[in-house]
Image (cartoon, rainbow, N blue to C red):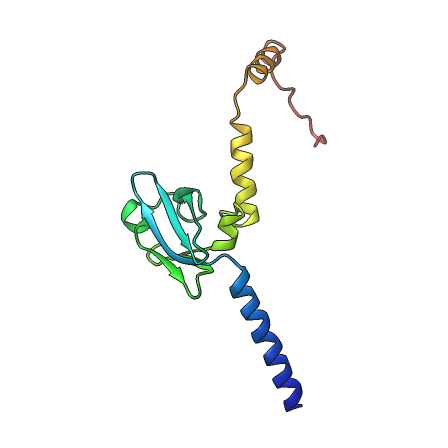
Length: 140
């Protein structure tokens, strides 16, 4: 039983070393108030930046709170203590700025606010007909 435990520990440690060697990890992070972006330096020599206020929980944050960006643990996360917000470095690199539900709401809000000549013309035609038909009881 002890031998099995030792074997599992060795496998887990090997897996951890592989993740640390292959996953992008943050070496440092800072907020640039002029651009409104967080700039992250990675352990592999690369860097990336993202708009701070696009991250779930940071939308209404002030510059002072955003300036207190911390790198978590082994560089797999970023943290803003005063705001109690955490973000995954691999997630940010993949363009994930929050939970799936939150990201879906952000996309839906932008889609509904889209403006185009075709959308404006369709709205005018619909308005000339009296607008959207009212739902009757029993309709969904």
